[in-house]
Image (cartoon, rainbow, N blue to C red; front, side, top):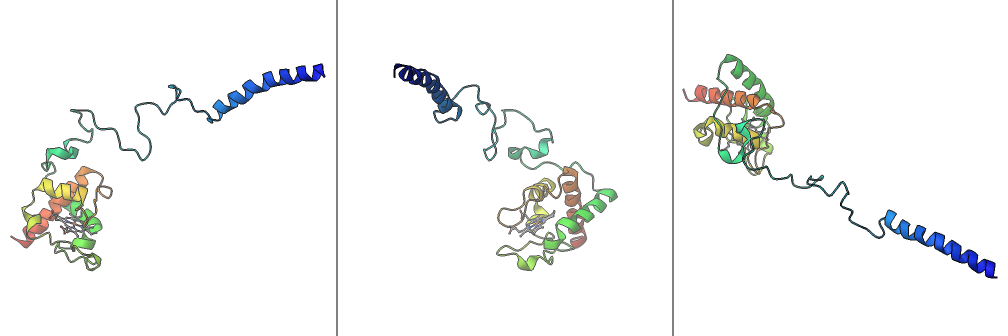
Amino acid sequence: MAVLKRLLIVLGLAITPLLVGLLFTYDIIKIEWISFMEIQPSFRTQEDPLPLPARSVPVQGAAYIPELGAPTNPVPADEASLQRGKTQYEINCQICHGATGRGNGPFAVFLQPRKPVSLLEGRPVTLSDGELFMTITNGVEGAMPSLIQNLPEPQMRWDVVNYVRSLQKQANP
Ligand code: HEC
């Protein structure tokens, strides 16, 4: 009897620390060790990105700084630019704004409630090159999609701006 009792005590002494240890290893009792990888100044999936440090400049250049207003057009409207712009316009804009920019593309009838505007009159004519560029980049909330993913290089969007300008000149000589 005495032997059995001693055996139980020894087993108890051996198993109890094991059980207590398991409580921690399986996070039943959770300790926020400061060495955990997730406790660090990074952001996880679905979290907002960290705010930009003050006075930092994006590597893609000034055209992307949101509060600085519209950029100026760095791409001369030469023959090559207009040709590239025409190609991109036909791929990305024509379906809504139409081949000549009148806002009568084949997809326009399906758009509700805001129809594609004519690019040849009114606001699109008075917008600066930079504002056109930003419209293509960001789209129009609730009406026109942002096209930055279709035209990722800034030059592609400037080419389209130049081409839209040439359409406007043809329409209002
Ligand atoms: C899916 C259809 C669609 C495509 C594609 C599209 N647009 Fe638009 N766009 C619209 C609609 C709709 C509006 C009208 C927005 C409104 O009601 O204010 C618009 C408005 C505009 C305006 C006027 C913005 C303003 O501030 O008045 C410009 C300029 C313009 N689009 C240029 C373009 C160019 C350039 C492309 C191609 C790179 C393009 N759009 C592609 C649907 C489209």
